[in-house]
Length: 306
Image (cartoon, rainbow, N blue to C red; front, side, top):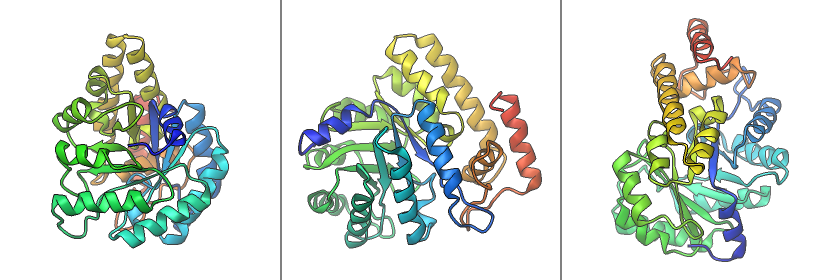
């Protein structure tokens, strides 16, 4: 639930695609600031409504604290007010998460986003209390990350309770279609608490159900214009065009992700081919070898990305 008109103004800027941006690294594993800045410019030029740094696509859980801080600083500087900036502050305790939120505030970030702590199995009432306390103490509005890769997705009734907490302004849902459908029906309030569809393989159906907000990692970085156009076609009621682009997006992602054990490896390789970073991932996520990079380039050519 928004706290003030500033929160409301931020939500009004978010319809469309928010890109969960990758973190380009150089060959030594350090932040590639030049590639990060150029990728930021590229995503905004392609029509991103906002930039989300330091999510799972951005390898936030694996990055050093120093690189996390540098990413926040450099992205805010490069965006320079053109679109809102969201930063991931997922952590395993409330003190650590609040420290990250304070760093984000000092860097000039607009919104923070976080999963529930996932190192421990927590009951729902404790998770609700966690976000209540987090929102109360955070200097920035907060989006809940319902991330099936990190923890069991929170059920709609729990999200409904969290949505009533002042300072909690939305949920990024990376789960399944049924969960998303229930959240859109029961929780979404466009100017007070928003639901961001985050699973690329159900973006088209989500738009058909009335979703106005999405947040994509892999395709958001590699082919942001496809998702932007899907939103535009949905707004115009051009559903055959939404369906066409949706099937193309799913085919592209299925084909690319099948090339490695981790989809993050293929996305980083694709971004290197597009000129953004070295393709290096943070271990233990494996980086693609030369043969893998070649297969990625072949997929990009097949789908006319390059």
